[in-house]
Image 1 (cartoon, each protein chain N blue to C red):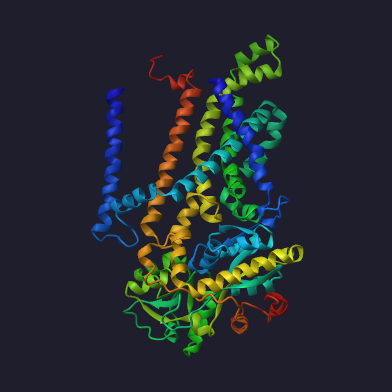
Image 2: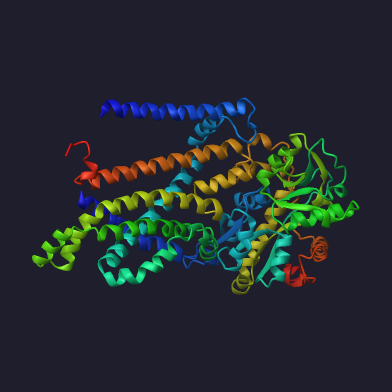
Length: 260
Length: 328
């Protein structure tokens, strides 16, 4: 594992370095205009400059706060609603069409509504974040809940386990891998919508800083902030992966290194 | 492990009411706390040069001494601010005069309280300018017949004043093709040849001039002498509910405007605080004028131009839209 693993890491680093080198060269060679597309070195210099400034960290803090709250609401709501709907066949049949209608509505389509309700305040962006990420969790939970092994279910019924015990010991362990997948998908979507809401509605955070930098004609700063947003996304994904590994340590999908 | 996960979920559930509580606060009501603390006033702004006096005035304590605590929000793109103020989400807002005339004629319950910023009325030295490439064949605004001109918002103030520049130069404004582009994208579009002319405001005006482009017309300056470009406004609801708060806020704004108008260097310095305009860009930056009083004549001219362009269907009742200066 270590050998192929480190090779993958090195290839990844080389790929990133190559990408940075291309972005450095394009403006230097005059393919794109340096004034509007600064070279990598200029962006990184601006980034280093920003790291020392309170304003950047406040923005990162605001973005993460919105992200965590939104994700939390979506996950809690998705799990509760998913288990409820999923374990009652009548509810499931009755809500399927509504869910399939609501789910494809792009969250950004709610921006005018969100703005009218909350202005630039955090709940407006939260509305977008929760709407987009709720479905990710809900759909996974719905799939997970019906995935219960029929033999295990019959066994539980034969032992006369109550409804709550069945949810706790049968449905929940079955659905957990799905739930965690849902959380991982929702985490990425939630971050996208957080930055979108900040950018378009003026909710404080990285997105709003990007908007201010753009209207201030601070070109390298705009790019530097985009890089920061990307780094936050990478961190969020790593966090979700780590959560997945811990919560599902017992699950076969996380134990691939042990030959079955 | 499971317990850990359960704990995580529990935290998430706890956050639900916390987040909802956030929304219930309704910061935009000009709340008057019972504890005798300052009145928190929310102001919807655009992160541009024009609103510098508010930040300067806040720093100088003009709001604090009137027992007002400002909470400024940057609503990207001014279009959101009018509905924000009308719905009570913001107590006050900043918007250009054409947007005000349009909102008023559409029955939006708002009223202007204070001036915002004015044109310098100096040809070639105004914060907004109609700009063409140095080598372009256009010599006067009348030459723009058939040309593509970039405007940040269609059917709004930029279009009104550029059309007036064309008209004054003897051209037919109906023959100009306006294209909607955000200010930051205009200079690149001009250089790529996507458009023939752009109308930009600072900090993009001085940047375009520094890049060697040519000012074809200072359209704000041409539209009316000492043109009131933008204003601060509030909702009729707030005026009725808390006239004292509106009065104190208006006084603070006007004191801020007068201070900014007489302290251009400090006004430029405050830009470094709330915008991200690079410090090296400040020297060439052309500030608007910040007179405290609205130039009513210029508003009348803008209303007539909007009427002529078909933006308005009838002459608005300016007495109902402009502040009642007699009583203040």
